[in-house]
Image (cartoon, rainbow, N blue to C red; front, side, top):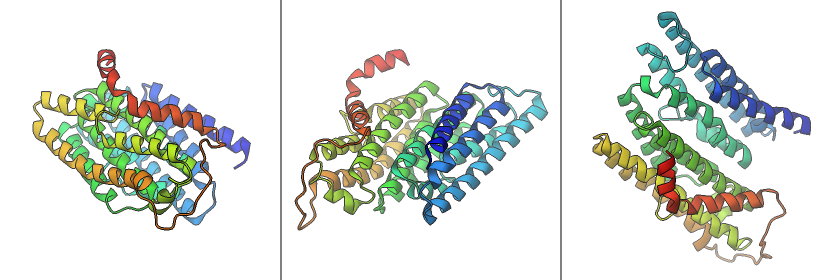
Length: 346
C-alpha cells in the first residue's frame, strides 16, 4: 500500500468514527458509518491474496446491508414522528430494524457469520482495527438509542453471542478466528447490560479494546497466526510470551487481572435489576471461553514442541509497537486495584 493511500484511509477512518460518535442527526451518523466502511476496505485488501479479496467483499456486502437497514429504520421513524434526532427513536418497527442493523455491524449472533471469515483474511493490525475501532461507532449508536430498544431482544442476542462465541472458539486452531469469537462473546456481555447501565457498557468496551489490543500486538510481534506457530514462539521471546499469557488470562476474566472487573460489575448490575438468572447463564457460558483462553495460554508458554530448534533470544523487537505493547499489556493486567476509582468516575 502506498503511503498516500495509507494516510488518506487512516484519516478517513478517524474522521468517519468522529462524525458518527459526535452526531445527533441520523443522516450524519449514517454518513460517518459509510465513510468508515469505505476507509477500512484498502486495509483489508492490501495483500491482494484471494482470501483477503474474499474478506473485503464479504465485509463490504454485510456493512452495506447494515447501513441500508439503519437508514431505512431512521427514515421510517422520521416519517412517523417527524424526528431525525438519534435519541428520539420511538417507532417500534424502527427500533427493531435498528437493533438488527447494529447487531450486523457489531457481529452479534445470529449476524456473526461474516466476522471470523473477515478477520481470517486480514492482517493482524487490520484485524485489531476491525475488532476495536470499527466497533466503536455502532456501540455509540446502541448506547444513544438504548432507552428505546427491546430489553428481551437485546438479552436474547447477548446470551446467544456469549454462548456461540465460547462454543465456536473451542475447536479453532487459527488465532484470528479464536479472537473473532472472543470478540463476539465480549460484545455479548456488553449488550446484556447496555439498557440498564450505558456507562458500564461503555467501560466494558474500553477495557475489552485495551486487552484485545495488547493480545493482537503481542501476536503481531511474534508473527504467530495459528496454535502450532504459537508453540514455537516461546523459545524466541520468553518475556513477550509471558506477557501474552497474562493478557489472555485477563481476556478470560480471571481475577486479579483487569478482565475480571467488567464481568464482575455486569453480574452485579444484572442482579440488581432482578436478572439473576441471566447473570448466572452468562457466568456459566463464560467457562466455554475460559477453556480456549487457557488453551492459548498453555500453548504460548507452557507447552514446547518436540525437537524445538534453539533460537537467539529476542528481548526486544525492532518494531515500533514494542512500547505500545508493553503499556497496553501492563494496563490489561493491573487495572483491577483501581476499580474503586473507576466506579467513582462512572
